[in-house]
Image: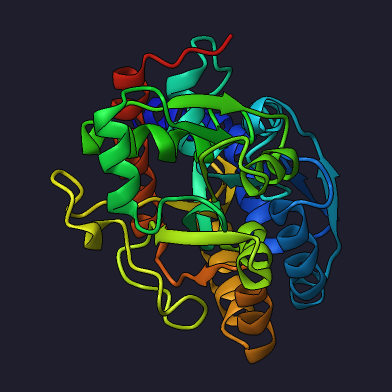
Length: 331
């Protein structure tokens, strides 16, 4: 009996060793080769810039090289699906955002990945507050002015965005949903042409990040009516009230932030995820990186991986409600 049990235990151990040994072996020796950092958006954007800046610091700390691989398309869905199918061995990372990991799951009926089940959160780099702007020549001096006009004239006021399903579009839909008004959405192919038409007065208003809109506000071409953060942006726009401060019914607690995060395929060994989180946190807390992050218009984050997951789930639920209420559908 003893020999039979011994044989069974040995066989099970051998089978387990075949499947688990490579993973744990790699954890112990990790990293022993370059790490692929997939960016689910084109080069030049905030997600790409963050990937390159962090990789330059993280590579030497880990004793390896991080290779940036841009796979843009469908609001980050194309690259995220590729990353979801990559080996969970610590050599594959993904730069994701509010679009790829909170919004798209409710927009695309045939999304090729689950934003929660397919990934493990590694780090939340930070959040980008959004600002609502109008032309400097607009008759609307406050958010309350804008909403009063929209209430009196349903769908007459137009709001621009960088495209259907973008965070700018959904911020507009959330304002309409919470504020009990209706706007006419005008989608563009990117922020640049959209904001140009707002400045010229062809479109009434737009939500955009403080990075994109900030320079135009400072030049006097745009007027900022409200920021979508929970508190005023004292460092950059101290005189601009929050949406909640408008006093409009239904807008208490209104908050919209774009965000940038790092993910790994689900099943990536926990020791690897923890080390990545720890090393990136050290990098992000340096004065140089704090300055760089704020230069991108972001508010740095120090959430734990569990807190990032909770934050992500809350974002998914919030935008699912907005997308359903606005009946937004993308193929």
